[in-house]
Length: 75
Image (cartoon, rainbow, N blue to C red):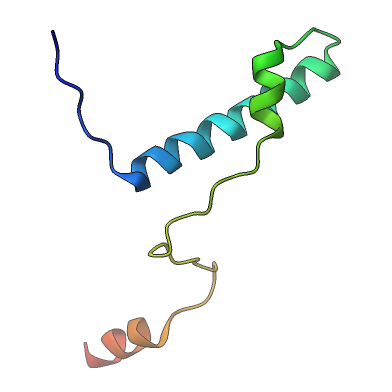
């Protein structure tokens, strides 16, 4: 019998977020193409996305943080 590996909460929530987003995409495409979606896909697509880990930083294109500017100035 194989041992179950422990998955960190961050990895578990990231996988859940990805699966919810994929289900939303699939249900949307199925509706557009007039195909049936499975009830499980519909339920997954309706779930609320779990929060992202607070350690992630949102990066805006075209701006630099002050620490990056300081590092560039010191070079």
